Picture (cartoon, rainbow over the protein chains, first blue to last red):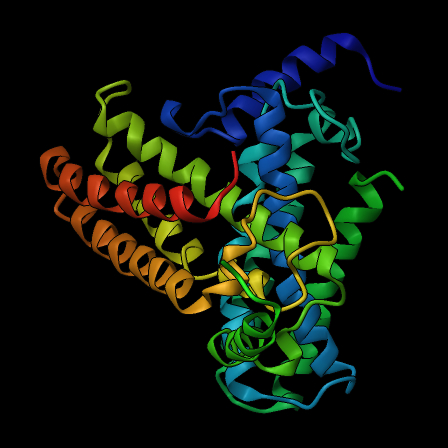
Length: 153
Length: 153
């Protein structure tokens, strides 16, 4: 059960965990929401192209794999700034309230994606489909586990 | 005046100019539109933070400037894949039809943004506000001139 007292303490924690320079804050909650949705969508499009190769739906293209994986790794760092305190609402979104109730756990998921997507980008440098597949799977698992915990249907 | 014959020739040109691997194509026009809008929005948010520093609205922070400029330079390469043939419609958007009627000119604007945002990222490595300001202005000009030509109000 979640208690309102915990909310304010955890909001303070969220301020620390997602600490960004004042210049990084969004003008309004709607912008933060749109930002995180945009970053996640761009990342998802590029990740999907790697998935299509991993699943043999399109031919493996080593150069394209490296380019797409580099974009995924770069984008993976961005969405989290859009989940700061005050961005729980302001526009339609699928983020569960738990993000703001247990921000340290949410951050663990974010950090795991950043780490695994970096490994995926490195794996694509080997230039082989096999080399990419397991890193792709590990990254996909971080997406799934975060979505299972923190994204509404 | 635009002629339908020119449209089909130029659509063929657009295929060449925006040639991407089959694995990079979008499942549907709606995704291409959402992709380019998302990439442009993320880029704009980071660019806006540099603008706030350039205009003295927030204190200059050399590290934040470098981080934001790096994101701008990376994002600057992405939106164009979302303007391929067939993405003229499919979701509400502000792109003028001219993009698909004169794709070579549109590409010049895109290339200019990529070039100027790379210079901006380099300029932020000097660590000074003055060093950043003129590169910021040059980049902002590329945004403006492309929007003036190709974005509806």
